[in-house]
Image (cartoon, rainbow, N blue to C red; front, side, top):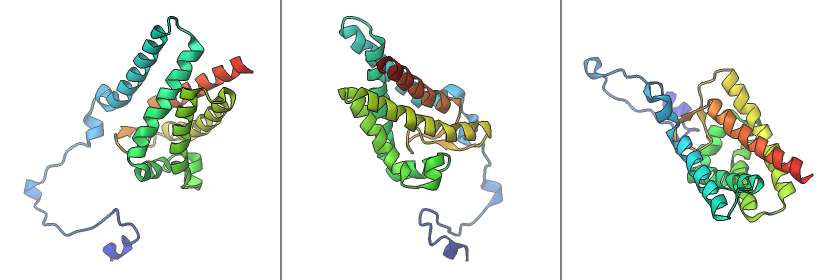
Length: 194
């Protein structure tokens, strides 16, 4: 009966297995036993990498200009994060629909979101219509942060889809910081352009 109930969900399968209680070991889930630094190492490395490369780019330009640096940082952010999501697009869309307010109602948004991030990365990198690019970034990230805030404030233990389905990162204040950073940078750039 259980196998028949799972026919609509091919990702999940049941099979019979001999259970020997004396040989089984109960262990703690990996997420709980990892340190904070080990848990968030992938995202910290990515932020460090993007920051270092964009600072180096500014240094090579002969001077530091905040707006140019933010533009390059946001290009790197969106290109790298969309890359990880594209490695398993379906897995990202499923994870994202667990907490995003738009993806909960419209499943296709998880797929559209990845290509929106990719397009924003390309737009920031090429300097395409900066006002439109920053406006879209501001709106998309502001909507995205709502579901993140709800999940963190309600202490829901769910997987963050920020790096796609590649890394098992828990939803936390790190996710809020990354969304808020993009909202803040796009807002600052919009204010200086208007």
